Length: 286
Ligand SMILES: C[C@@](CO)(OP(=O)(O)O)[C@H](O)COP(=O)(O)OP(=O)(O)OC[C@H]1O[C@@H](n2ccc(N)nc2=O)[C@H](O)[C@@H]1O
Ligand SMILES: Nc1ncnc2c1ncn2[C@@H]1O[C@H](COP(=O)(O)OP(=O)(O)O)[C@@H](O)[C@H]1O
Image (cartoon, rainbow, N blue to C red; front, side):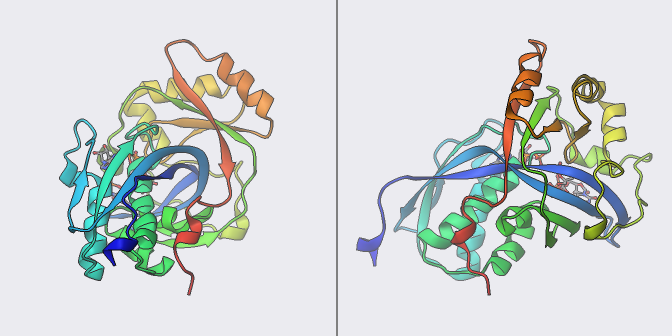
């Protein structure tokens, strides 16, 4: 078997998501919030490089400053797969971050999902998408979506998916330069937690919103400032628990024009919508 293992590094993308809206519709008995959201894949991605090891070790070669290797979601994903399947193979991991951390773009979760999907193939595990999604949920609420791999109306804490068709085009995404801690938003007294549930067939992007946005804007005025600047050009909204804000354009030229007017001190990028995760075929559907 060892002869069949590739000893080369292989690179895999881990794309970002945007929450086109995010409603908080209730709370579970354990305090976790029940959400309804449309998750949109975009083509800005981290790069995960993997090299299979025959000795069973999982080694992170370039840990992110401030995130010890043992805590990195890529390492945790690989170890979880080993524990669940008894696989005796290991992996070397290198992560190149392009997605701002704590930006509400799901970077850490997407990195984890890419490791689950890529090792499913590299280790020859042949686990189903459903099984990988259940494993992913143990790593973080956004991981199942990336394993699901298609734009989706997401419910529960992130584990219930209904595929949806979303507008194709470009998003201008601004990073206000602050880190919004997710627990601070979920713990805020003024967070709206009783938005009436909607059905996936009744989504109207004009009337939906991000329920976390008012709290994030109150705690971090930089988020409100970035959103208000972007709102000059198109309706702008925050993604996830922040801090990034985004606006849609069906025109590539128009989105480039908005970015060109960005004040020097503000970080921003443009990304195209994608309909399917690049590693979608790495898990089987039952
Ligand atoms: C809000 C969302 C939407 O995509 O996104 P991000 O901003 O992280 O991308 C996610 O649901 C974020 O889920 P996840 O990434 O797992 O949250 P964590 O940072 O692990 O959660 C930190 C804390 O927030 C609370 N929490 C989290 C998720 C949830 N549905 N209800 C909660 O009450 C819990 O107290 C948890 O301990
Ligand atoms: N591979 C990883 N990339 C980014 N963050 C990671 C990773 N592994 C663990 N983390 C932790 O996850 C936290 C959330 O990061 P991230 O997923 O980028 O933000 P968000 O959930 O706001 O989209 C980070 O602050 C970091 O502590």
